[in-house]
Length: 127
Image (cartoon, rainbow, N blue to C red; front, side, top):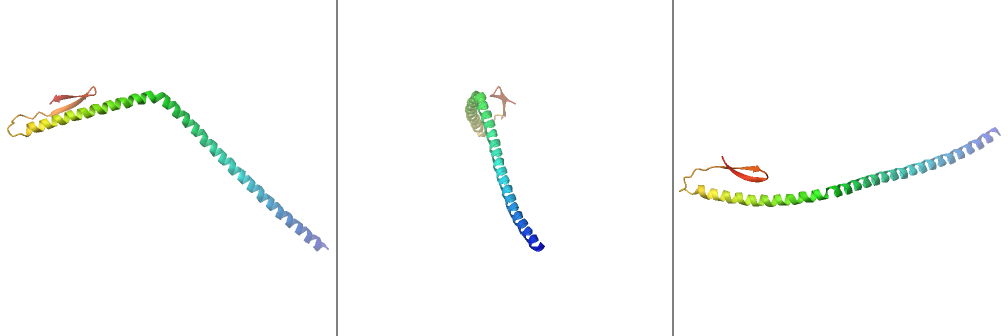
C-alpha cells in the first residue's frame, strides 16, 4: 500500500515536472522572441535616428554652401580655361624657341625663361 502511494506520487510528480518544464521552455521562448523583437525595434529606431540626423545635416549643409559651391565651380572653370590658354601660349613659346635655337645659322645665346606665378597669372622672367 505504501508502495502504491509512493508510485502514484512519483507519477504525479513526474507529470507535474513534465508540464512545468514544458511551461518553462514556452516562457523562455516567448521572452527570447520578445527580446529579439524589442532588440530589432531598438536597432531600427537607432537607424532612423541616424537617418534623420544625417538628412538634417545634409539639408543644412546644402542650403548654407550651395552658393559657395557654385562660385567655386565657376572659378574652377575659369581657372581651367586660363590654364588651357596658358598651356597653348607656352607651347607656342616652346616651339618658337625650339625652331630658333635648333637652326645652325643662329648663334644666339639661349636665355632660359623662368615662369613665376604672381597674382594667379604667369609672368616671364629672364634669368
